[in-house]
Image (cartoon, rainbow, N blue to C red; front, side, top):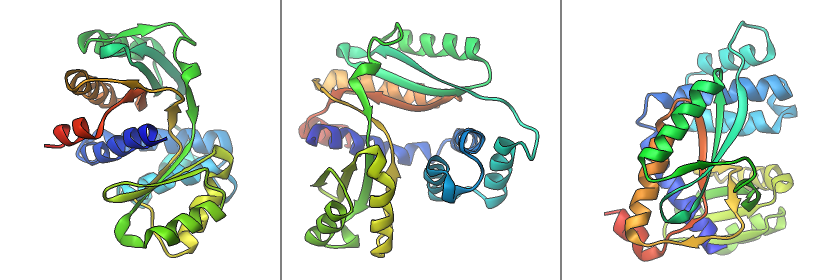
Length: 249
């Protein structure tokens, strides 16, 4: 699981870059709208909406923006209809790439995603070619300053977490999707605020890559994430601690 957690850590650190992008609010608004459309506007009865709301608050999104996005999803306000879809492909070094999007123009989005992949050393593949490698997991990241390791591990495992690891600056809790909410609530009930709590898709098998490919893969992922319709990008790249340190310089 360490390789999975390592990739989650890199993705989490990259979130600081996302926060600087003007498109971040637009992406979250789309997620709020779709979550409310599919599951209703009450977060107590809509786990997906609760997760997106946490992301919106972490990004310091104004309450008015959040309220409007939810009302567009429930039909209380007029709004755009977004289609959820995923694209599959391969990146530098042959690593698998899975891209989740919310789009109001699938033809445009498909062309733009294919163009980014090809420009950055990858290619788009057919449906089902790589998606089978990825499975949704709950990942909760907590700063080590919040509590000691034994206490954090006990809280997580007692609440139903499937794995716990201590990284350099943080604890990482992994859960099955159905246990995510219980674990997140247990952490918060203990007076601990997670740095992030998400349900990403993690690869069941990882591919070790070298420094050159790692740079290319992260450049590809950043380019994809800058596309306005892309919500999440996942890879099965296994990046060693040494390469992570080199990339962090």
